[in-house]
Structures are given as C-alpha cells and as structure tokens.
Image 1: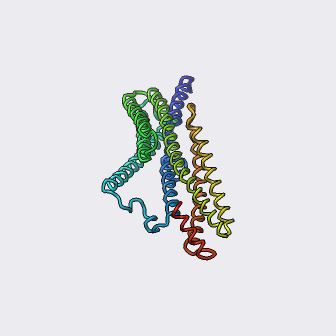
Image 2: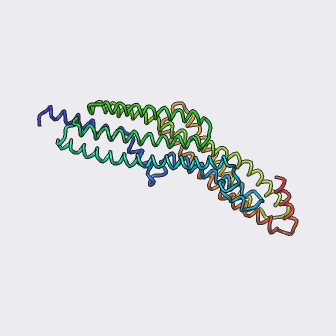
Image 3: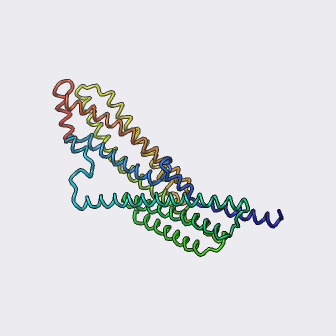
Amino acid sequence: MKKSRIVLYLACFTIIITVLSLLPGGSLAARDSSENGNGNQNQYMRESISNLDKNKTDNADASSSKSDAKSDAKPEQKNLSAKDRDNISEYRQERRQLKEELQFHQQEYQVAKGNFLKIRNRIRAEELDLNSEEALNATKFYLNSSINYMMAHLSNVKGNIGYSNGNGTEDKIIAIDEKIKLLEAEKAKIANASSQEELLVVVRSVRGIWNDAEKISLSSAGKTVSEKIGEFLEESGKLSEKLGTKVGNLKETGVNTAELETKLASYVSYIKSAQEKKETADSIYDDENVTREDMQKANNYLRQSLNDISKANKLLKEIFGELKNYETEGYNGTKVKKVVKVKSETT
C-alpha cells in the first residue's frame, strides 16, 4: 500500500470514528432505555415528583381523622371542575404523543446507526470510498436521525418542565427551545454538505449544542425535584412538631411512649439528613462554573435525600398507626382516649 493511500485511509478512519464518538446519540439511547432508568433524567424527575406528591398525600391521610375512603382517593377521582378535568386529559394526551415521538426517533436512530456501521466496515475494507454518494447519504441519515432523537428528547424535557410548574419554568423552556432551533439549523447544513469533512464540522457543532442542552436538562430536573423536596420537608418539619406534642400529651397520662419517642427521633433525623443533602445539591447547582459531572453529583445527593424521605415516611405511617390505636381503643382507661382526641382537634 502506497504512503498516500495509508494517509488517506487514516484520514477516512479518523472521520468515521469522530462521527461515532462525538455524537451523544448512543448515550442518549442508553438513558432512554427502560433497563437504565436511573440515568434517565426525565424519568427521574417524573418519578421523584410523583413519589413526593404521594408522600404528601400519605402524610395528609395519616394525620387526618376524616373518612379514609376520601383520603385514599386519587386526585382525578375527587371532585374536579370541568376545566381541571380537561387540563388533566390534555396533559395525558400530550405525554402520550411525546412518548410515541421519542420511541419513533429512537428506533429510527438505531436503524441509521446500524447502517452507518456497515458503511464504516466497507470503507475499512476499501470496498467503498469515503466521499461516495452511498457513504455520504448513510452519514447524513445517521446525523439527521441523531438530531431528531435529541430534539424529541428535549421536547420531552420541555413537557416535564412545564408540568412541574417550578421556579423559572418559562426561562427553562425558552432555553430548551433555543437549543432545538440550533439543532434544526444544523440539519440544514447536513443537507447542503458535499463531503465527510463538512459533515464532521456539523458533528462538532452538534456536540457543543447537545452538551449545553444536557446541562439545562440535568439542571432543570434537579432543581425542580429540589423545590418539591423543599416543600415536603417544610411540611414535615411542622408535622414533627405536632407529633412531638401528641406524644408528650400521651406521656403525661402515664402511657409508656418510649417506642414512639424513638421512632419520632428517627423520623426527625431522616428529615434533617434529607435537608442537608438537598442543601448540598443546591450549592452545586448555584455554582456558576458547574459542569455536567457536577450536576450528576448534585442529582445523586437528591436521590439520597429522597431515600431519606422514603424512610421517614415509612416511620411516619407507623407512628400515626400507633396514635390511631390510642384514639380508637384508648389506653389506661377513657382518660387517655379523650385527651388524645382533644389534642388532635386543636393541633
């Protein structure tokens, strides 16, 4: 093989490898896979918010002395206005549509990638020229499908941000829309490209846009969950004070409340730990020079905070269950029953 031929082969190989390595489509596909849900920031945000809302409902149900049937009812089963029902229906329809679009573009991306890899192998075997029409079309299809997949992913992110209704929602949506527009512009460049070298320029540009978009996505997901955690922890703090009062009232009547006090102390400890981890995550998000890796660390702190909240909520149910037993069955005569009921109504 002549020297010039070797140089050309190495140049071709470099371009192909760069296209495969710089595009984030592969990592995007992994995150959207159902087998890797922990890495999917959109799924993480939806599930986290859903779990926090459920915890709030559980707390309200446990602390309420009203009908359990009413407390256990799902929000959509309660009396809603026609407007609220329409909004819920519209949201669900939008979510289904975004999910279908994401799945379609994911499948398209997988097909394009497989075709692109076959072309690469043929170029390696010197069966196909790098700048042949077939090779260029395969590369363009791969780039376009990758960008479509990214845009569908970002649309999904935008939908979740809008649903969360957190602080700065409008600004976050605008930022996502800007990235989608930039990706659209890159698709126009792909259509006009006449060589792999020109497509390589597009690849590098797309990589920069996607990295910025991912930072927005991670940050939005984390900050939204952090806001929800903050709301829950604020309610939990007030609730722990009421629980302390109820347990204290029981103790004054001669009831052995040692086990209840231990559980309450553990509950307070978990809430405190969750608050500390949330604050650590917030400090990372607030750093002007935060990187994508930093935000992943922050999101991990939020996951740990959510885990503490889950443990606290489990204890909370046990505490309310025991208090309910004292209310309904009484302990040490009717005096305890009466005291607990009166205090419950005034707190």
